[in-house]
Amino acid sequence: MKNIEEKLKILRKLYRSDLLNPFPYSDCRKILTEKDEDFIPCLDIYFSDIAGYCSWGKQILSWSNEKTIETKNNLQKSFFQKFPAFSEVSLKISDKETPQLYNQILIYDLMRLTLVDILSEIEEERIAQSKSSTELSLVG
Image 1 (tube, helix red, strand yellow):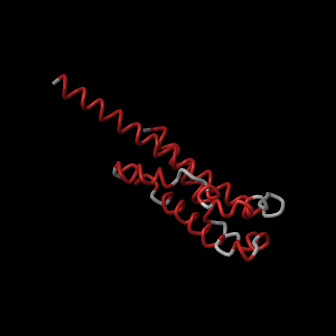
Image 2: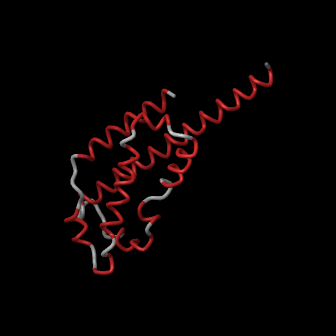
Image 3: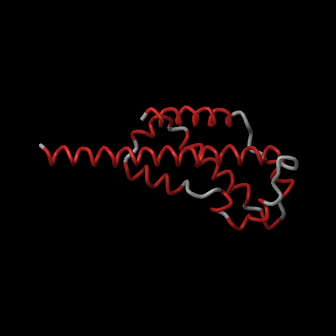
């Protein structure tokens, strides 16, 4: 549990650091064409979903098993895995050409992966506790 709490602190720092950054509209507009018109709304929703999960903080520990598993499954894919139609856009993103967009995608990917890691650990701990309870009830 201590390991999970340390990761939750890291997640909180990432989440708070991103609150200072506005959405990178100007970087997006530099690289988008007419056929990419859905990129900004899709990216905004993707970022919002991750930020929403992060905003739960330590309350994540009280989520039901179903919510934990469902959320972990929702977070398995990066933005460009979820939205392969924008694969060409991904090739235009770089720390030199689109630094704000590049950094925000990195931050959100780090938050996403940290959340997946935390949720996996919670799931593993619950399974271990369940096995332990079952073994104790068999002995008693």
